[in-house]
Image (cartoon, rainbow, N blue to C red; front, side, top):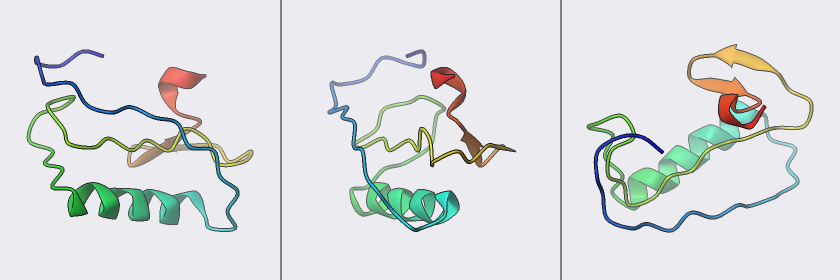
Length: 74
């Protein structure tokens, strides 16, 4: 959605139950992206992996680092 042209990449959805706070889930997701060499050079640019936290229970956040629920899923 938006951004420069890029190669195909896998986009999937995962539904999980966790006692972790949303910020820790995001930290772990970004660690997985880094482990697979995700580089954030261009917004919405080419990526090897893209993990978004869409929602975390009823948590609501306007923090720019983690907006919940995800702004394009409201």
